[in-house]
Image (cartoon, rainbow, N blue to C red; front, side, top):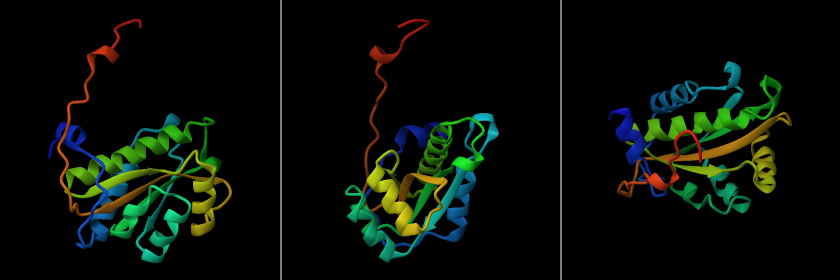
Amino acid sequence: MDAMDAILKRRSIRKYTKQPISDKIIKELLEAAVSAPSAGNQQPWHFIIIDNHRIFNEIPKFHPSAKMLKDADKAILVCGDLSLEKFKGYWILDCSAATENILIAAHAIGLGACWLGVYPREERIVGMKKLLNIPEHVIPLSLISLGFPAEQKTSEDRYNSARIHHNKW
């Protein structure tokens, strides 16, 4: 699949088959993640691969949008490490770019994925940190559920010329 197809046809998938995702595929997704741009090349990210369903069952207790994890094969938690920051606050942009790269790569190789926002919701941040024993200086930004899709979603044209401006508003 070419890059434009992957970007334009990617959708949030919340229903998954029981087919397992190989470690090789997870490594490919993480290679895509760390290829994202970052401010000053600071690369402030860490990733936690989750495949324990006991953990998946705990997450919806503090993250009500995470119910699809019950069917997911794996998930990746994208975190920002404040001790790696060269430019304060840019970890959010950097880790968001890494998250989007994972989503596009997942779609391109036939996986379904869904971005579950963690940051800036305090109850979600605290819940993830406690559950996964995350150090104080590391902030969870996003959780990406992953699995082979058990649903199909059609792409839609989201281009809105009313929101495009040239040289001024």
